[in-house]
Image 1: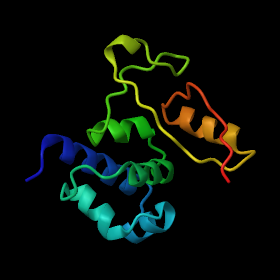
Image 2 (image 1 turned 60 degrees about the horizontal axis):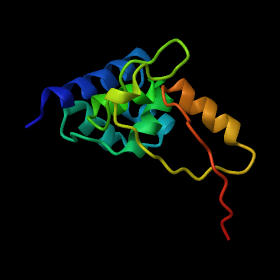
Image 3 (image 1 turned 180 degrees about the horizontal axis):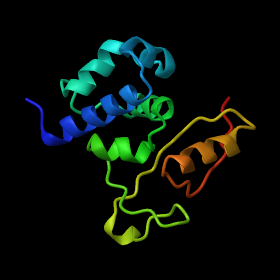
Length: 129
């Protein structure tokens, strides 16, 4: 049985897909997410898709990632001010995220995250080898 949150997420994704006039197969081609998986999210059969799936859908559907994460129940990012920062950190849970970024693409990744409502607080370089 699906909850209101599931239906809202599914409805949001389906409306975005219909806005672009994409079939499920076209959405799969553009996002890299299997069309059957997209269909299950849209109908609420998948209640909380993984963040990797949401990242791909956000990019393809041009929906802020923070919105999809919140609709899926992964996080509440609160209200972003005009600078793209959370207005009140005291009332929000902060998450640490680790990402492996190809050397030289750090700026591009930061821009992508900011465009999707996620603030990059600090970036470290680790030597892997």
